[in-house]
Length: 490
Ligand code: ADP
Ligand code: MG
Image (cartoon, rainbow, N blue to C red; front, side, top):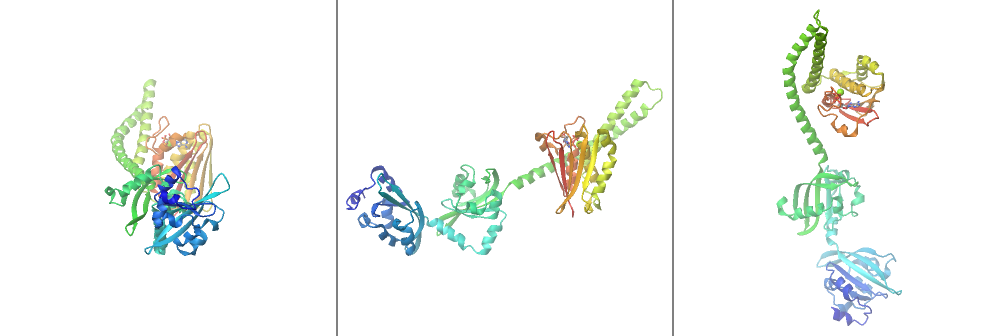
């Protein structure tokens, strides 16, 4: 090629040495260089071979003569000759050409290289992007039904061409990844949606026949990256897309695993609690009878006349300790029974007032003021009064126990859409952040003589009412417990 290039009479500054060799080594990019008069001064080997041209045919020719290689007037007017382009460089355009009845689509890029003098070289490069366009036109041709199906899918669906450009990004994907479709389609490379090297690994597995067949990857557990950078566990199935046996893209379907993982933990926890419950019921039953005997006799004996004072003191101690154990057993059996709620339509604020009255002495003892703020239009809702009374007692007790120096215990009842929301706020010592995850774990307690079952019981009862409970607290800042109960309950 070099010999014919140098024989061209118009050739002024042929790119030589490394630069020339570099351009010739670009197999998929067709490069042409024009001098300041817009005459062809260099073409790389790929250019000549791809267009079937000899160097002597184009050397020194005005560039617009080459426009006829491409289809339509657009190519000549807009896309091809840099003399007719706006002064904005690099300029990108799309050109098409028909070869044996098939359209080839090129992405054309034009740069200007300024030399030391005023003279400028223009470098024109073409890349075959037919694959991308084929897939894009497939996407465009999807009918409304298909489009809606893809859009409405709960799963994330992403399709990309072989260059990694994203062409489909449905609502499911948007929800999981936090991007709006217009932020990624045609803008972001698909590998950017995965942690380091994951996209590469996925591509390798798709070609590997061991994962559902060649060109298919099935039920692969991996991660994607949320827009904010958080990794999200997903289940991915992917498929290579073909057209006329050519690979044109990859479509991936994926499901967010966070919800499933959360459910799995919850199920595991419930199973553990159920086993624990059965054990507790059995143990309580075995211990309860002897305990009643011991407590009963100790109580009778300490009232015996003429008992030495020391013996009476010891018997009282036995009696009190047995009482403490009985209370512990009572807590344990509430926890283990898990009886289904006997729901009736009732007035929840009235029940709150009733429990507060019941505990009035304890409030006064600790210098705690009780305040109930409730809307007047709260309708009767369906709940088990015995169980919700237990919930309120457990929560009020915790609040009291946290408020050593008095303060206010505020209960608010409000309506939010189809839920009644109850918040119980105390001004106690609060809960350190590292303890928050343990609050509902059975036997978690920070109190001497605590059972650590109060909140476990509360959570169990609220769940049985199809409600939920959360606790918000900070050490030194008090604690707020929020309960949501459905207004219309099954
Ligand atoms: P117990 O009261 O027997 O310790 P609970 O399940 O009722 O068991 O509570 C577990 C733990 O949660 C308590 O030991 C305490 O550390 C913390 N806690 C619960 N409620 C509050 C509250 N209102 N203020 C501060 N800490 C609380
Ligand atoms: Mg408690």
